[in-house]
Length: 181
Image (cartoon, rainbow, N blue to C red):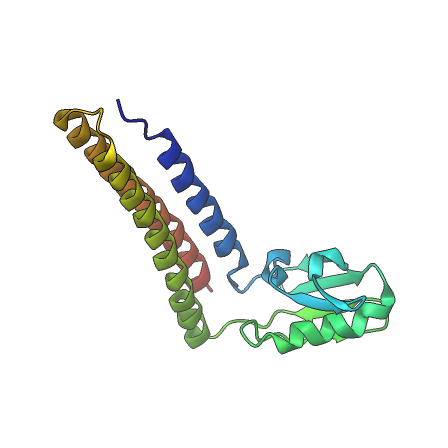
């Protein structure tokens, strides 16, 4: 019998990565994960923001960044300002960086949904690649009968559909959250 558990685990990993990517997508409310992709120049090298500062959401429209070392405060503000995809304008007072989250326009919301749909396609491609690898493994297995191979292929196709549907469900929920004013 052909074991699909490994393929299921790989597809689950794709879903988890996709969920993490969706957390980074801006929805109009302040969330610390919005800045997860920011890299800050500190101590002569580029470091993730969460390694040089604490990021918290003070309320729905404000992120507060408290650097571990106040010497990095300018670099943190600059790194956030440079990332044009976020469209944020941080302000620092010498101790902390405040990042106001402006309300999203309808046009900006649609643009964010469009960008998020690219992540959907990437996740689905990864799932289809896992399916293709599994199909190759099934075809290469010489110790399996044709019936077992057909059943295994059907099982892999069902898994692919199941996980593609999970991606669609996650995206639909995120799209609704983005478009909600």
